[in-house]
Image 1 (tube, rainbow, N blue to C red):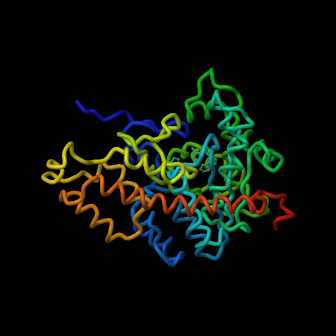
Image 2: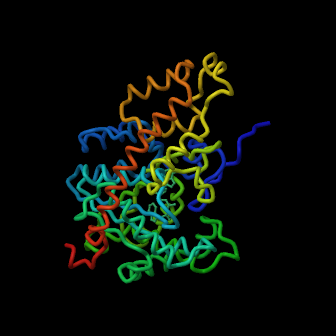
Image 3: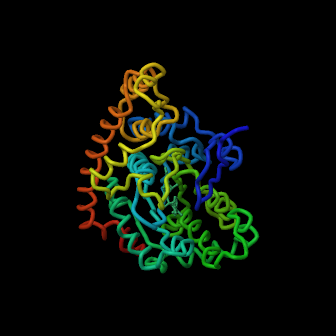
Length: 379
Ligand code: TYM
């Protein structure tokens, strides 16, 4: 009998033991290759930590999107956030990567805040709270260092007049039976939630629509968002747009056992607004791959492969590949104990948070420069 917990990965729920190879099969996407990682790195001038560590596990049409750029054509980026609360470190992974891609490919980034989606899906969230989180979370997006000239952040609710025309055209090409099958909606789902996918999909074509020419779009996001793009790719054909390309990230695990991040368990994630001492407490309480006693750990060594603390070094907090390997060896050999390893991570997280929070505060003065404007004003 296996004690693995059943995997569920949808845009609204990620739980169980994630088996990425199975997801690649189930979702019908292509595994990432070294050749594609190197092609991105060649244009960027360096290989981003997330590419070196295999954070991006799969893609659709990334080779085509890169090929278009290599032919001298313009390319675009699209990603987003469902603003239902504060941003955690996992959300930042695809946004950091967007910053890297924006610089490398001189690409405009369309950044959608699906405040409507969160309101429609969360019984306890008011629309006013969701919209307020749009502008709070936008500070995190800006703090990632994106270019105000090339970044367009928008709220579905407040910017609907820029979205509705195209949204309706997309919606007309999607049947209820498709969204029911793809998203698993049943008869109890409110009709706003049934409509929302059209609005998340239309952004794949928004830059092309605004600029009056077909621009290849790439979506960096974790793999949970993939169902939208499957449908959007069918719609693209029907509307004469390019199919959107995707690059799918793994999930940064939470800090508790099993690695789940949950809004109902604030200690399972580090939020960008956490005071450094709160983040430190969360790190010190985190689940590790350590043994029950110091003696056992010295004898048997730790298990970085199941350790959330190691995952935080791996995904975000150890830039040097050699230092990461050294840490792994020291852990496995029993030389490095969990307390020490946590202390060091807490120190690095505190340095990161102080810097990020300063950039978040600065972002308040620049928010307007990043918001989506009518076509004529920005270009
Ligand atoms: P949301 O708010 O659930 O997630 C925002 C982004 O963060 C990614 N993500 C993670 N990445 C790594 N590790 C994690 N633990 C982790 N948790 C979440 C998500 O994949 C996503 O990229 N409906 C969307 C908002 C949206 C969107 C988009 C996202 C609208 N348009 C286009 C991506 C691309 C949502 O609720 O995301």
